[in-house]
Length: 124
Figure 1 (spheres, rainbow, N blue to C red):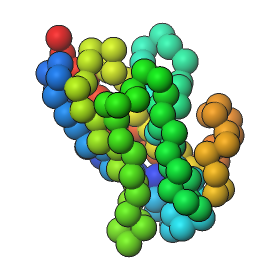
Figure 2 (cartoon, rainbow, N blue to C red):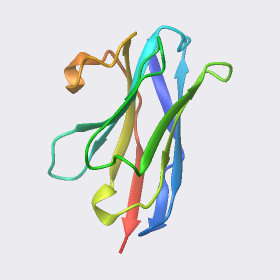
Figure 3 (cartoon, rainbow, N blue to C red):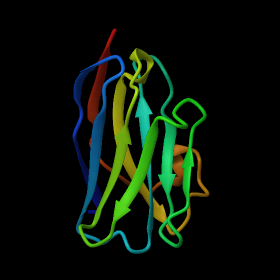
């Protein structure tokens, strides 16, 4: 079974930073676009960022533009998301997910491979 392992979540104060990591288990990221999704209690899962496999094009939700940065290191087979200027509304479980090549799918159903998620809590 193909899946991801996320790490880097935790508790941080408003304005703080965290870096999430996402590593696949059982495959390489060479041909996989990787997205970060988040889900807060009582809310739908939303895609916050994505990076393609072809040209490393990146995409961000309006709510995180200018604060979050997604990147990939194919040599380490890892995708990262640097989260700066964190706000209480960023509190959620963050999961990474994969789909072939491009970040075209926006909805969770468009992604085939998932991790178990990591909790990010931002205190006010």
